[in-house]
Length: 141
Image 1: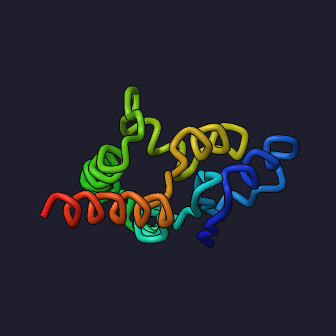
Image 2: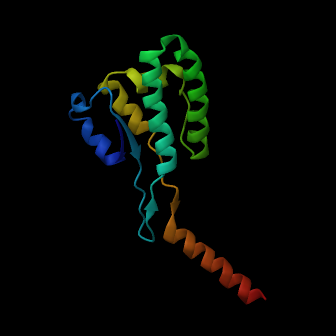
Image 3: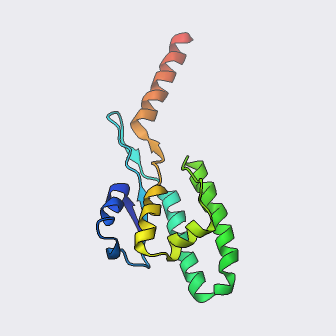
C-alpha cells in the first residue's frame, strides 16, 4: 500500500507510530506554499519511490536471493531522485533503505520525514518571474 501524504500528515504518525502498517509505504510531500504562489507536489518522484519500496518488499519476501542486487540498483535510483531535488543524502545507504522497506514503524517514520519530497515548482512565482523577464526583454527592444 503506497500513500502520498503531506509531511505534516506523516509527522502526526509520530504520536502513534504503531498505527502505520508494516506493508504501508507513505511518501511525504513537503508543502511549500508561499504568499505568492502554490506548489505542485512531486507526484512523479513520489510514485517512483513508493513503487520501489513496495517492489523491494516483494523481492525480499518472494526472491530473497535477488534482494541485494535489486537493493543496490534501487539505492542508485533513490540517490538520483534525491540529488535531483536537492535532498540531503548524507548517510543514505543500503542500511537506511532497508529500514525504509522492512523496518519497524518507529524507525521508518523519521526517515520518511527526513526524505520528504519538495514540490516540483511554485507555479505563480515562476510565472511572475517569467513575466518580469519578458517585460524587461520587451522594454530593451
